[in-house]
Image 1 (cartoon, rainbow, N blue to C red):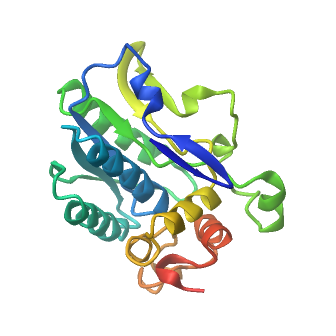
Image 2 (image 1 turned 30 degrees about the vertical axis):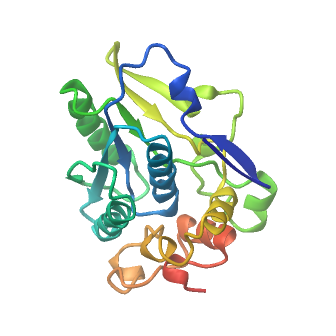
Length: 246
């Protein structure tokens, strides 16, 4: 299924359909952070399932940071949005888990995701995990808009590295879960244009949140901080912060 605009194109599901190593896909999980990237991945998946009349069950999957618990409010609302929008799709119960976090250190989050993904895959509950990780803005734009310093370097685009899109994780020498990142080579302006093209700005966009500010910089999570990297990236791409704030 093709999603395309002036910033690029994504042939959704093509990597999975071409890989003979994959088992029959009955259940997939979408890592819903509450942000626009993962919300759009959920949209692509639901559109694909609906238009092809597939019998694939969908599990929303969300990790909750003890220091920034507000993301679960948005992730739950996004999950509910899709359940109501696609009544023909079978949604599995929203899988939620909590983890501790140290500012500027993502390792505790990564370990928590790994643990829960591993368990779901090993118990044969989930065959593939969909992730909303997208690419960084182009270098010239990043430097111009203050998005170069403090970026996650692993999100720099490397078109030749197809494992950024679809890969099987190896843990302790053992092949484990499959991860699909359909937006790995697309930056957020591609996603913003897709939101416009598919009429998602008025209903889906307002219930997403990208800000990673803490309680003291967001008035106890009631507004975007406007200073974190993710707030600046959202403003660069959409022309507004969380909730349409300008």
